Amino acid sequence: MSMRTLTHALLAQAIGYVREGNMRRARALGFSDDELRELRRMSATDLASLASDGPAVCRLSVDHEMLLAIMRRLTQDQDRELQIDRCLALGASVQMMGDFFGLTGNDCSTRRSLLGLETRQGRLAMPAEEDEHDAWHRWQQIAQEPQDPQRAPEDIRGMMVLAEETGIPLAVVWHLVKAWTSPDEPLSELPQDEPDEDTSEESHLAGGRVWAAM
Image (cartoon, rainbow, N blue to C red; front, side):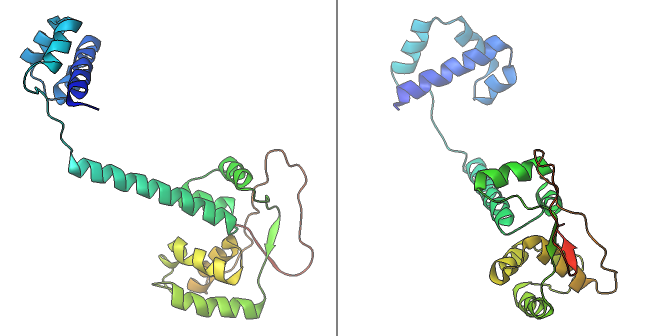
């Protein structure tokens, strides 16, 4: 795009803001009130001449600070979307997705459907004692503060690594971490994961102790 085209677009945008009564945005483009009044009186031919004749009246500059801030935000948004999809694939529950990402049951159902994930219902089985023991030892290596009752259950990245390595559903890993860091608190039965809206039957796992998907 040529400087002439950019200049004409900028002038037209400024006039558009003035006609809308949005003087704040018009001034933000770099024009004074006197300049805006003069531009408002000009015809389309005058504007074309102003943009193309003689030296350039406008200069294009980059707000580096703003550009970097927007790029960082976009990267963070993309990372968050990838993390949400990964959590669901690793077996996160509705409650967990709500606590960490603010998602609803419908949000989770829609995303699982788009990802081709089977909707989980009922309760998840607690891992065998030996598997839990191995998971605990691995957690000590993964987590930065594995025994902190406040921070450890918030370490979503660490729990994702543990779920991926052990094959234990992420919802159960979250439950385990909270139990490990608060051993004096009784382990209560947790709510079941919410079923899809179009599913009326509820499945159950028979036999043995179970931990609900949180």
